[in-house]
Length: 457
Ligand code: GLU
Picture 1 (cartoon, rainbow, N blue to C red):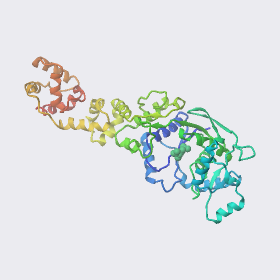
Picture 2 (cartoon, rainbow, N blue to C red):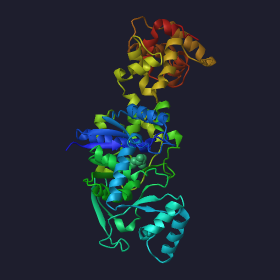
Picture 3 (cartoon, rainbow, N blue to C red):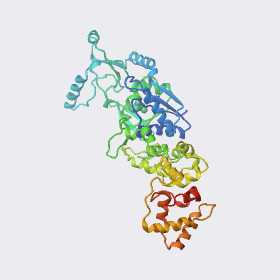
Picture 4 (cartoon, rainbow, N blue to C red):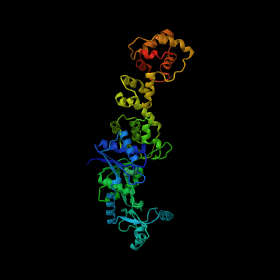
């Protein structure tokens, strides 16, 4: 059997790092098993779904390094869902209900006061044909519920009915179908809730593993029953814990700051996002994986914890630094060129500055310092004036390389008697305008003798 997974976002907003976790769990799971990855847009809600969000989700996945084998849209499959609805109706497994939300709420309260489980009591199943017709004559449209297989003969006497599955993330799971209401599959206005289209698509697209957030665990019980009602073998399931903010709030499509789009715009590396999104809330330590292959080697769905994983955006910056500090020039080349950093100096420049950067784009500031000189240059302290004059009078002859800094400063020690900070800091300030930055031994050959002389205060 070919492993086939799907990531099924609704294109109603930007995806965030929690959605990326779901996408990556699926992607890595498939990758480890030579499987296929389907991107399925759950866009049956045509009023809220937008093409621009769908486009952005594709861009975001691509940025993360995910390349779907197939892209599907629910919005073009309404006929297929309608056919499934007819099959279920014909089998007596989908029945019309006319209760209003207030009516349902009232009944729920009554059940609770009688210490009964607050589930739907299937009252609509008791309606006589004449009652149903009367609703129709009044112009009222029904919503449709799936009759859960949680009884032997009498649907009004549900019995404990366990559905089991061996969750690829959580291990053995049990849901009791008597503990839930018959799910509504079709609303009054004829639109679909997510439950049925998802199952129909999972069948048609031969999905072998459904991996998603653990907010869907209960759904899974009903969906397994639905797979069977439609004559299909249910796939395997996996439910990962959800990410929350440091204060424990769930992430939502409206939590804009953590959208993949904004993280990318902020200069966070895709592998920093992917590493955190996948490894947080697992028994693996969170550290930066350099490539999807490396992350795939470390990914183990069964090592995921069952409780929600708190996530701190500051960790992204920490991981980012690790990735940038060791990023080979070849990997950075094109992006550096976009920042105007190219030519024969680009590679030695990158190797000199990367260890000081938080984000790749920060290289631009240093490129300017190397090319044009300090962007703002503090007036040298009076006590350094003479020392700096000596220093610039005693620049070593060319050619310059990494040793030049040592040759120069050894000579200056002899000439000035200075050492340590009082020796280096005036030079650093004169050359770069900053108290901190890349090793001067690396920067000096980039400046060259002429460029260094031009920085004489
Ligand atoms: N569109 C659903 C959601 O985003 C998909 C859930 C699933 O993967 O089945 O919650």
